[in-house]
Image (cartoon, rainbow, N blue to C red; front, side, top):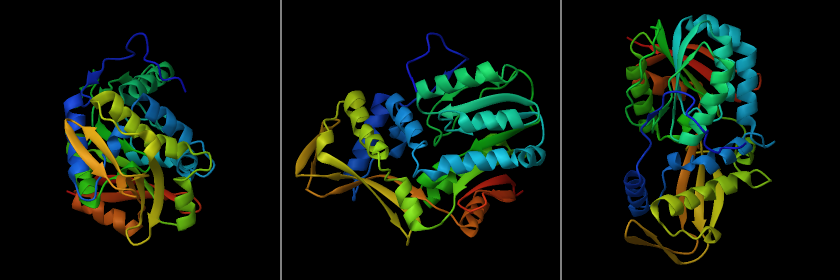
Length: 327
């Protein structure tokens, strides 16, 4: 996938992407923590977005294929459940493959607002969708969706807003963070709004673990690209050859834990500070929680939502949940 920047903007863009100073501050805070960690939201520069798209095509990575098949099979049911005349607000739009299924299957989409931290990925996704859905007003926002975002108003008033959060991105957040994000999502779409959320369901640990350790090594390359981005954008000096990708499933915490492991004793500089690693020290860069129905329903309830509809694939590997305000 070619992610060179389009020659001209494809739509009005609200650009709130994090500054160099914000990224550096987040990285320093993570490296100062015990144990060390890096924010996974910074995986998605242009190269990271391209690598993630490649991950979704690896044979071990079941999530995307299963979710797309589920959406295609149940799209008519989803459209009936959510109703017409919607302003669709997508959190983390990525390549837009699932978005195309949603926009094509819904009745009278008024506007579409993707919120995506990678500006290049955002513009290319909107460019493709705009060519296909000329009657839908495209109102992209380049921003960190974990922070409050003011949505642009469409030219034609929508009946309600539908938040769309596919994939397993919600699982990348700790439980209290996920509840906070779901609560902020509810505030954004309003008390009459809805949310369609993708959740990766708890299953055979071998199936889960294989998805994050593909034989082609694309996920490892994706993980290490985080360090390359930081070196380029904030002037850090991570030695990519001295860190190794490691992803393991914790049955106790029902989550994949992805680390970058230091291969030697080394010193890294970020933001004028030095951080010493010992050989074998693991730095957490991502978690991906796998849910039971009870887990997810409880989280949604804490955020002021209730589960109105639930759709699973035939193997119960992945689910889509339609949320409505509990009040």
